[in-house]
Length: 211
Image (tube, rainbow, N blue to C red; front, side):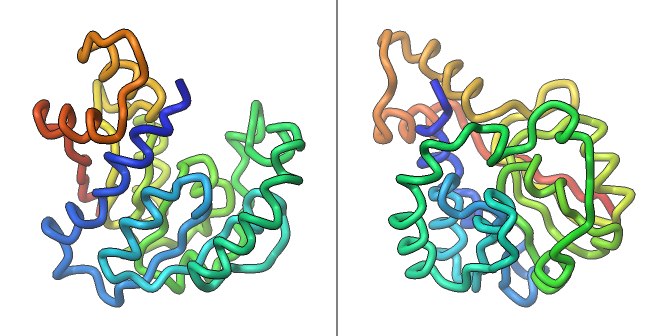
């Protein structure tokens, strides 16, 4: 189970929830999404909430320093590259092993030029500049060490899309597996079933003010 169901349900609500909580503090409504294709539910949530988005899929996935500036361009990029990217090893596309701990500041223009940075935390962290004062991070899995890392860089708010236990938020794959177990159907849940269960259990994102 890869957590795809929660990426298309729980994450697809995140910015509507954020707007209710701190929307009056988010100006301008701009976002740098490090991987719009792989977290499409989150991407749609930003768009529906009225955010102007720039996408870093080429930057983070392929180390090509080109930002994608619109949803139409993102969809075109996905159609062109998915057949190729699907054949590449994960280690070429995503930080693994020791690379997960290495931070190389890069693309400061996009981190610092947008109010919100969103997406998979390992990508978000990978090239984060030292100065993120006043910024908002919307992501999934974090540890207490990750939270301290963001705090030291001046991040104002951290929003995580899954529940926190003992200071750690878990990935969508683990959370979806837990929901499937709770449902007791012995199969993967549909989007409708997941949404109903999320509402029933009162699952919602977590918001922390760090600075």
